[in-house]
Length: 360
Image (cartoon, rainbow, N blue to C red; front, side, top):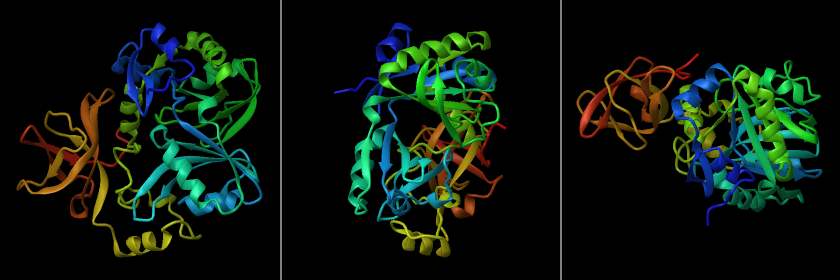
């Protein structure tokens, strides 16, 4: 049974091509991926990402619970600050990557991936020996990502929050499009700048329409998940289920920067030992030199044709007009500038390791 967001029927009426994604019926494209991608990089676009999951954690020990399940140090948060991290499992992999919002010292919002809502909820609940009040508000919450260099201009007339000075990874609550207590966050998954807007389902249509109207002068368009994928790949952002999962090492995935051994968390001792021993593979970015599009699970080989890794994500970059990807390779091949080969239809196609972001 595929779930709908509050605006599924609206997307269909806009002519969106719909696909099942993470258990939801979601718009993959409207005008076309390249056009939508370009709109976000140069102007402003709006994504309905209401399939994402939201949990409220509340109570005297809310921070303790988050510290236990998160790789990052949530004690560094202050009111209005957002933090990226991941939930480690007990076997060296990743349950999910997620965002933590500190609303106040006893109240936090966790934002998780759509495909992992139930899994994450069960996992965090299992560790909740702290009496923390947990509420899953995923089904009643809509989330719109308004992304691109014109996002601030497009949105400012709708809200009493001063958007321009908001720093990356901070948020504020205020009136938005005539709705009170809307959470506006200076976050996103595109690298193009912009905001994410959390609103109750009952106000979703009103807020969507107001944004489209206010953004019209700036060339706003609705954007589907297809362009969301090409945009995030140009930045080298991980996608759960592709680049990280229950069986991938977060350290191999380059998530050491959000792994804080200054505190005890699930599997921290083993991860610390892994860090000290050194990882055997690394997630790297690469650009294709020869023609060909790398796809998930294609083999990566060396010049002699020996398997050295596998592709986790790949696409034709609309900005660069060439193919880029992410993949795990043996550490000897992880240095920038190293030539590697992607096995595409039994051919070894040349690529070069390049540190993301691919688009500056």
